[in-house]
Length: 112
Length: 109
Image: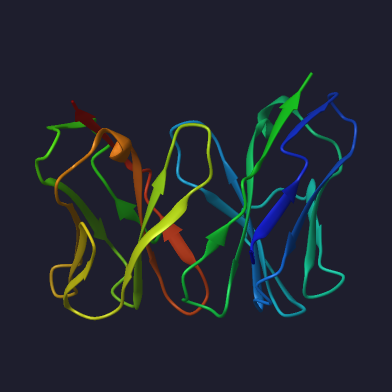
């Protein structure tokens, strides 16, 4: 089945140790999104790509970066994770701006 | 700040009843509206989307949109215990979608 796949499902890292989360999609969607979601909060958009055009939200910390090497893959890099970065990280795709978004299962990040 | 407001709940309904979930949005430029279901510890799952004023039905779910009042609702008929989850409302324009914090629904057997 076509889908959005995130790896790993669970990631534990040490305070300050870089970590990379990955997302792949077989939907051939143009738009890919990264969200951060903490308990009982709305998903917070970090970045999105429309094809290769990168869009960074104004309040996304500099600590967070993203790469989209091709249509199918997108990565979230956290350069120096702090305790406040512990959250669920969600990748989503859509066929275009304003279209329904389809989410992967998420990566739950824990910081020791 | 573009916002989507939802009552956090919990909204408790008996099994078989109609659950009514409501949402308001602040951005009059919003063109697309979505309802997602999110089980605890899981990712959001798209339930309904609506672009035009009026009702849109899909099985037990009906989405309602009133752009003049900036109001979106989701009705769940014949509610089942498996419908117990948090329901996220989202509104969007060309650039991005804004999510509400969700309403927790509890369906009591």
